[in-house]
Length: 221
Ligand SMILES: CCCCC/C=C\C/C=C\C/C=C\C/C=C\CCCC(=O)SCCNC(=O)CCNC(=O)[C@H](O)C(C)(C)COP(=O)(O)OP(=O)(O)OC[C@H]1O[C@@H](n2cnc3c(N)ncnc32)[C@H](O)[C@@H]1OP(=O)(O)O
Image 1 (cartoon, helix red, strand yellow):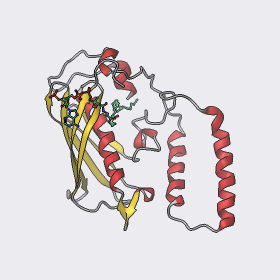
Image 2: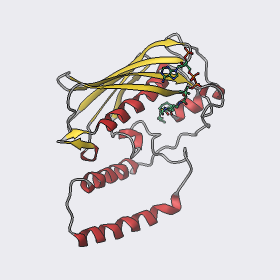
Image 3: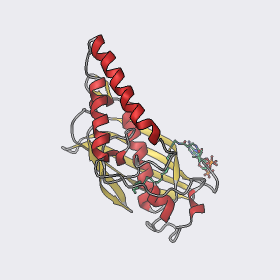
Image 4: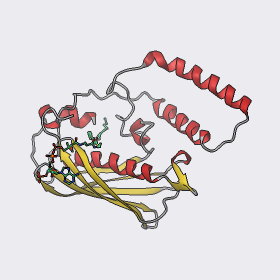
């Protein structure tokens, strides 16, 4: 987000070029990229492991009490370091799984180009919906976050998702490497029509989507 917001939009696909003026990104604030420290990725991964365990254990009550005390102690340690949006490395570090965000799927981008993007990763235990399959909402999250990156990579100003139509074609497995690809298909004024597919390593489409992204007007949140 920060690259796009701060240094502007890269030209591509015949869309407006030289759009590196902040006003072209709606009402988004100017963020200065926050680089993660060398151990930040490990910190986020440790928290993901904790989430995996939180949904895949059955703990005795005394262990739960002990866990509450320890987690609260950890939170107390972090609390004094709270910062406002855009001042944390979370979500801003593309070299880290899920850009270093605990919210996002811990996937890594392999290709971020004008004609489309590709990322790779796994759904974790804490993404389980039922019967060992990924929760449908987490697949929507994966697609929606990718759409922001597609718009960014294609050289358009910041856009928001007006609709996201997901087709669930096959059950999506957990803890299995998968590949996601997407691109802007066509542009009508502010409207960017995008598509993306989630595939397994055999190339089977597990889910695909069609989405409308709308470039923000000046001042739009
Ligand atoms: C250092 C490393 C950096 C790492 C990070 C790098 C990159 C980061 C990644 C990404 C890049 C950067 C930034 C990304 C930032 C943000 C992405 C955010 C994505 C989201 O946050 S996603 C959240 C869910 N999303 C919403 O929260 C949207 C809520 N919503 C609205 O904010 C408005 O709704 C809005 C603005 C969408 C439109 O509002 P509006 O008033 O401007 O436009 P209006 O309604 O007039 O529509 C104009 C034309 O679209 C048609 N139209 C509209 N809606 C339609 C629909 N549903 N179906 C069919 N057609 C539709 C109309 O019919 C008309 O069509 P026509 O012009 O032909 O008449």
